[in-house]
Amino acid sequence: MSSSPAKERILIVDDSGATLEVLQRNLTAAGYRVFTAPGVAEAVEILGGTALDLVITDLKMPKVGGLDLVRHVRENFKDTEAMMITGYPSIEGAVNAIKTGAEEFLAKPFTDEELLSAVQRALDKLKVRRSGRTTLAQVVPAHKGFIGDSRVMQNVFVAIGKASSTSATVLITGESGTGKELAARAIHYGSARSSAPFVPVNCGGIPEALLESELFGHVKGAFTGADESQAGFFHAADGGTIFLDEVSDMSLAMQVKLLRVLQDREVCMVGSNRLRKVDVRILAATNRDLQGLVRKGLFREDLFYRLNVITIFIPPLRERDDDILLLAHHFVTEFAAESDQSPRHFSDKALQSLRSYNWPGNVRELENVIQRLVVMTDGDAIDVPDLPTLMRFSALRKTGFTRTLAEVEAEYISNVLASVDGNKTRAAELLGINRKTLREKLRRIEKPSS
Image 1 (tube, helix red, strand yellow):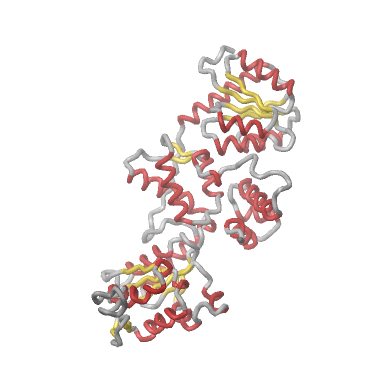
Image 2: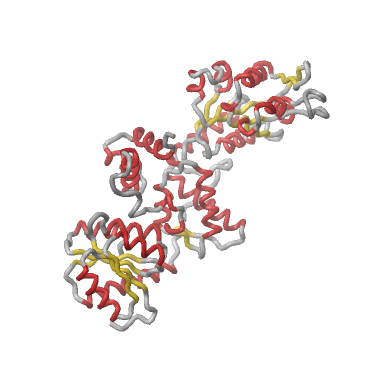
């Protein structure tokens, strides 16, 4: 075989010094620039400081094996190919190597020609991959601002439609970042009040001392600095809808005043004794368990029942597997257009990683990640190495006997999920637990106790 004029860089990883020497001699003679490492730890260090085109690794090595190294390469180095060699050939080993990401699998002993041919094929595939593009063809139109085709989101859309047709108070629950305000807006703009104001209020973002004045207004001289009378959010929303986000953050004293508004539809400005009628529909939201807070005496039971006339639960993104890719495609198209950049495309592996990740920050986290990818990624293709580190596999992530049982369990669960492409039902079966228990364990992994 002729020498490689481009002098591609190849790293050989094997715990056998004799094998390293033979492979280095043959590949150097063929014109490649060759690096060697006796184990995965050394290989990871070289990968971190040297741009490589191909990693050739033995399958079985002490401590960390070749499959972990191949996966590490695949998920951390966009422009590096991987190839596996082994003295213990088996169909299962070859299948696992290819599934993990190795482009070639060679069983020892092999001839020089077989080695060089396999190396050339791997490098040829790398060239194709560097210029290739993968697109997401399926697009689902937005439903009142929501992107989603999963069954759980279809149920949400039905609930929003029913809530829009009434004037009842609605409590919207769900984790942070799931889209509770988006649901509130959908209810308002689908209702008979759609032409009137929609006023969102973040109750947790307003200091307690100011919340009453902000909600109900104040008269001139009501407190220091009140140089003139000012209407509150309830006045601004008259005829329309007020959205009280994070209503669970209200103090018990403020809860009493809100309860009075819900009962009498009247507000009293701070510093005044005069009640004023308001025609306002109230939508409230929380990411906390209000019933649990009621049991602890932190939230009034009578207010809870006033708010909880209609309840809509917005599911977390990890329970919307089918929607993650649709949302990713929507956001990548949107942000590319906003920044006047060319359309971006995800590799199949990148899409798999997005779907396997647990998304503790839900849709808001996904949106932020995609925006960063559009800004920071060179070229049109987004691959696994472009993703945040937490979404990529690491061959050396906390090994040994220094970890707690919870850390070991968390890593094992993550690896099982990754092995089944994020399919939580299949992962639960492999782990010997039900899907509900798996969800609870995933929540604990993402929100460890202090």
